[in-house]
Amino acid sequence: MEKNRVGGLRLELEERVSRAFVNEDAGAGAPLKRFALPERDDPAFDAVAAEVLLEAAREGDTPAAEQATGYYWGEPKLREHVRRILARAEQSGDDRLEQLARRFLR
Image (cartoon, rainbow, N blue to C red; front, side, top):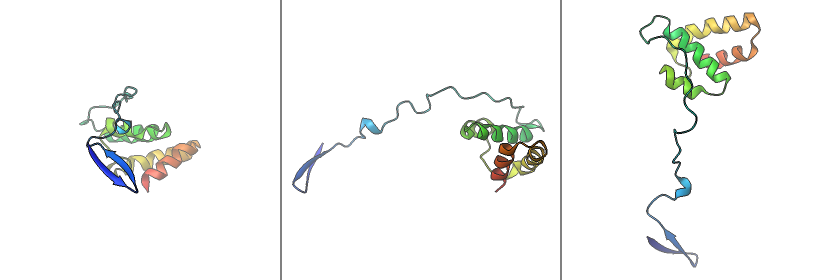
């Protein structure tokens, strides 16, 4: 432990991180959601991955979908699939899905 004087006050500095800043539960929260994804070599994988990313975003859980699909939000490889989802959302009047698809395509 190191001791310093600052403005007449003595401070004790510990070399290790305070326990208040350690998140021992990181990654140990609720179990990851399970997504129905085909095998990665399946030709439909990217289309399903696009659906999964958008639906997870609707639920506020994009990180879980990114982990499950291996794709990040905005992945260029999925743009054509997201354009089709956008057209479907516009046709069906699903305003939230339309908004999410437009955000993905930015």
